[in-house]
Length: 236
Length: 113
Image 1 (tube, each protein chain N blue to C red):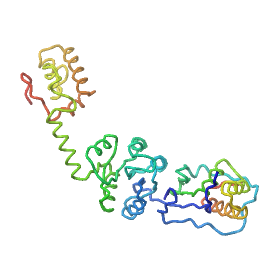
Image 2: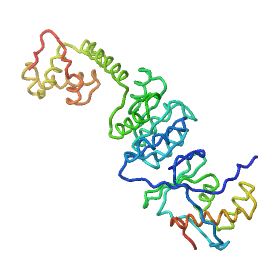
Image 3: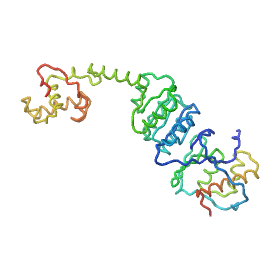
Image 4: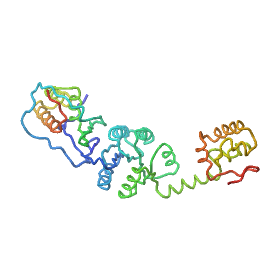
């Protein structure tokens, strides 16, 4: 077995400002960390740098950075594998990527990613993105944001996602509209001329079909997409 | 800052003092657990000094000494650790251990005796 080459025992010390957001970089570009360090000076601290996802996770658990700036392909695998662990460790993850593809970005955003930056962006832009992510924002290049919003709008207009309204019966739709109007179960029963228990059971089925667990969630899901259905109540 | 595989990102290089022996060979030493938490990150050891808001990153040989000190060790055991792990001449290992221990003591990370 060969021994590791010997270097004099040394320690590097870095005193950080406790009042600034902390940033860890995990990227195969070794110029990223020093570049960000300068670009963020006085606004955030780059406290750790590695090329490996497992090491980034250890740094995140130990140093509790607000943001981890990550590449897509790390020394020990794709960011996908480490992303959920980093998110669970309580850090926000910003991906710096050569080519930004919508499907890929959406997949990672769904897994908890806080933003995407193009590798072609300047350091000043990247620094601003880091600060925005540290503030809890989601950072997306404008064309990607536009594309995601366009897709979302089109899904809403199609009534996609939850599959409504075609899967609800007419009575369930009436109950749904009453709840979306903020009516209590009793009030809805009075309005529809049915027993309170009947409304309760419709309500349970509507919740199940729409995958929600509360009236508040239901209102959020249906907000702005009141279905047109013959014989139901009109909007208030 | 905490680096990895030798990346020098930070600007504050610790200067290790060049002075004579300050620790008896058989003196029991250990780390002050109340002042620092640490973790192995890749082939480095990263230490967080809680009270002073300072990160330390230790290279491979310093990390080996740190891990040995974590369970308690004498200077002579630390020298043996370097000699066996890196095949470094004993005289050089003794001097390097001495310097490293001084650096830890100056940071109040070492409990002596």
